[in-house]
Image 1: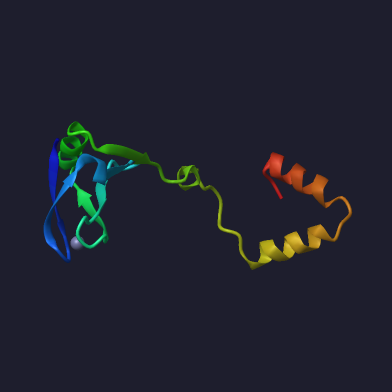
Image 2: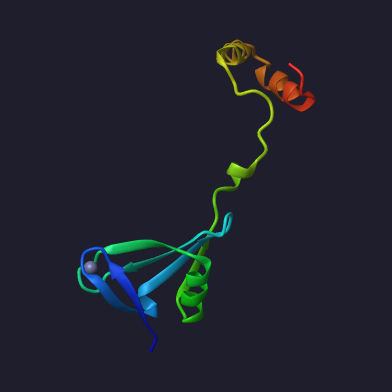
Length: 112
Ligand SMILES: [Zn+2]
């Protein structure tokens, strides 16, 4: 069985099996890290891992966990941020019985 040497901040070098370690890679920028629980003190340890370390760990059978940032982060943001005047306009708009129709209309046509 493959043993993996890692270091715990408290206990120093510890030996782990592939089942003790999880590798996480961020899908957006490909940065990797690995996490394990120290077999001596049970401390959860997370460390950054270079791509070659990630490859090495995955090749020895460590579970790979790919995670992604929320898609909203990559949505294009156009136009100015809302300000106090926009908020007041919106508040006034909400006083009108037809606010929803007017809002959908201005939303679709793009002019206010
Ligand atoms: Zn430890």
